[in-house]
Amino acid sequence: PFGENTPLFLYILREAELMASGHHLGPVGGRVVGEVFVGLLRNDPTSYLSVDPSWTPAGGSGYRMANFLTDAGVAGHR
Image (cartoon, one colour):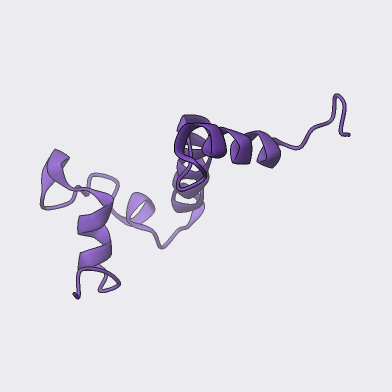
């Protein structure tokens, strides 16, 4: 129905459906969401990327989103 003007979000939802039965984003959708978050952080003068660009998490390269959510107090309380 959209012809040549299909909205990006429909491609992203279809990718998620085909790759993970819609349970999570695929590589393109994940990249788009990640890039948006990084862009927001870079443009926020109060974010760690602006205030302390050399900041890295204490866990180094082993630090994952689950660690972040636990540290933020929104996950890991089972």
